[in-house]
Length: 223
Image (cartoon, rainbow, N blue to C red):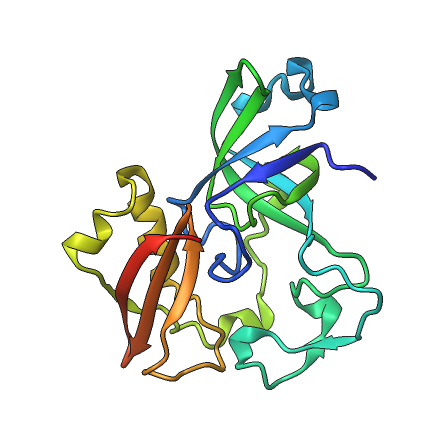
């Protein structure tokens, strides 16, 4: 297989990326096709769908070996489950899929057709292997969700000053606030004195979390 496209998103590194697609709908990213696939005919009709599937590679988690069990972060990093019972990036084949909202289909002079999507959980530059429309058969109203229904009270209140939020481009602010509200920290880290750094849209967002409140302490250009 070869990538047909790459994502352009606000995340230069894995830390802080929402743990699943759709958790932060205000995050906007672009799917940019590789030159060989910049044929408008290849996406003819896609604008009639509200959501699409992105099939992509965990490019920052490629390993030479694999393990049959992993430790999901949302279970505190202490309980092991089978790799095929989780969405861990550490898999025999580092393949992922995300359902995202299709916001816009546009044509750019240098890039050809570009898909603008909302709610993507991909690091900037992630290779995409395929795109498929999301259809009614993908929705299962009787589905159960295993361990993901546990420990769901991880969201936090975000405290950020007007001075600091003003350093973020206005169109990106809701996305950043949504990411922070999901509490980007690993579940097993709970030091209220520790400052964390999140790379977002060329900015280093530094914060700490105590008693359910995430306080942004600094926003500066990412070096």
